[in-house]
Length: 468
Image (tube, rainbow, N blue to C red; front, side):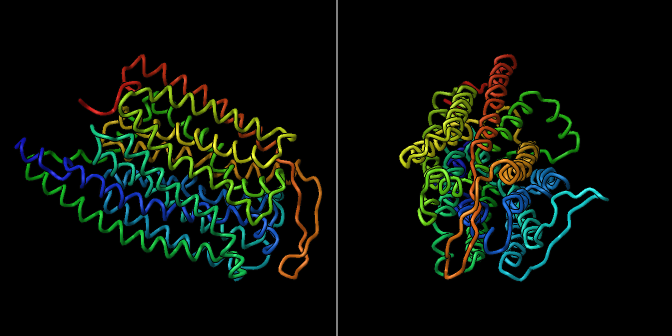
């Protein structure tokens, strides 16, 4: 029986890495749509008559259903009940529906204003209907996106537990960052070619369809592993029970990681949404080139996340790595907030440093969850963390957009674009960068609390992942 287990697919290095490639490719396709509109913030505002608040509303839509309808928690239950194969395919289908709604909303078919109010209290004033419906589409996409994210994490942990787990999770995350990088590079050229802000979304739908086919191939391999383990007498995992949620929620270390996650990512992903416009306005870079600078962030993460994951596998120190990454995050955003630091080389250097921080924390954080929570409950645990994270992904872009419109407008310039006169609002990004830095300071505190809890409970976060 032991011999059969040792010769299973999971013990084959080639099979493990093929699985990682398949899952990671779909992650890359998913991340492209997540950030495809970021370089076109100014185009959306001018072409669809959106304000920065409207853009923030649209971006915040990603978390609406995950947060308020608890869709992420349900996703975790589905994952632990029905497995990574079914849940991953379901997630891709949901993403395609959301992408279709988003495409329809910003392709010029939706006009008019929506009055968002509760009784006599006006929430956001006159909001373009296109922004609201695009946000709803982004919300549907967000349900599938987060569902696939937890499915991919659990799949990688299953295939790499006791082996190169942090390296594998780092590579999976890094491949997703390629999608983010492409989302910084390609949307503006696509817009210039088609004169349509919805063109990147159409490309995203095509990529997701390819990702679906790739993931189906993964399910074939994963199903074969099930058969091998069943034949070898490996017991099936215990199915999800509602008591699992209570057990996970009673774990203090789990909450330290969850809060660290939302604070850290709230200072990174919303920053990416506004980064292109920041680069244009603070560093006076032409918008045709500005998207390339934020793209250095995911490229830095692409190279460094596996490196730091490999170090964590062999040397441990996961909690310490999270502390270091959070400190670097604060340093970068504080420098971004200084108005006089506005030269082109400084912009490049700060984005690269942010990419290093963006590599340090995830490379250590996601494998740490697998040490704190049993594998049978891991899908639900990841879902609960992502649910907490989605509060930040929903509220912070809305906050930043509101702050820009309320406190940061410095003027308006008029220029001719494609033969049309456009009014472009000018912003000072100092206050938003200070907000991001505050998130980083809080993240440092929770990283220290996590390290202290690990020392107290002995989870082994500071120990290597690779079993000798």
